[in-house]
Image 1 (cartoon, one colour):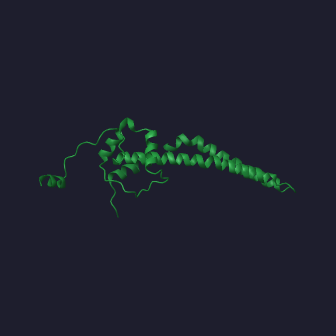
Image 2 (cartoon, one colour; image 1 turned 30 degrees about the vertical axis):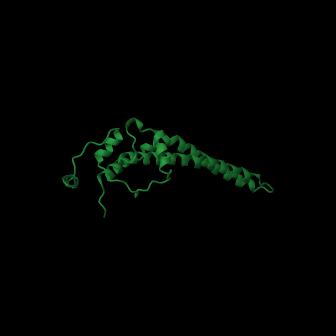
Image 3 (cartoon, helix red, strand yellow; image 1 turned 135 degrees about the vertical axis):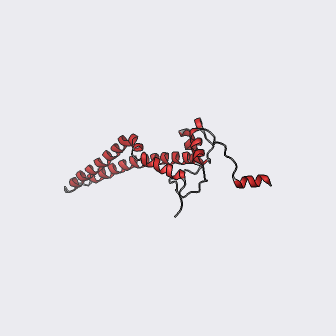
Length: 163
């Protein structure tokens, strides 16, 4: 079994603590989406009952149009929110890893979306992607807007300096 680094444990604890709080701003949006789907389901039931009358096929057109309108509203909206979430997660992970050069006041939504487009606009961020080994103190310093604190050279670095 692979040993986990401290950064993984901090990230996991943070996610667990804020599991539901990140959904609070979207409650109204989720309720609107749910209402639209429930209206489409209700209209489907009404249209199916209306079709049973002889010679009437127009309720099926209304049903299809309502489902198309509902899906044309919900799917792009959900995709936009998903992309925004993926962009910000990628941006903050890359700042913490030291891959992205932004610090302090440079950490903005606009710069995050720019960084997301530079990285190829992935829909999914793999947990197994190659990430550099980073000290937790360095990552937190980068996220707070500063540069990592200086570290004393390791034994291997001291040996290379002596030669």
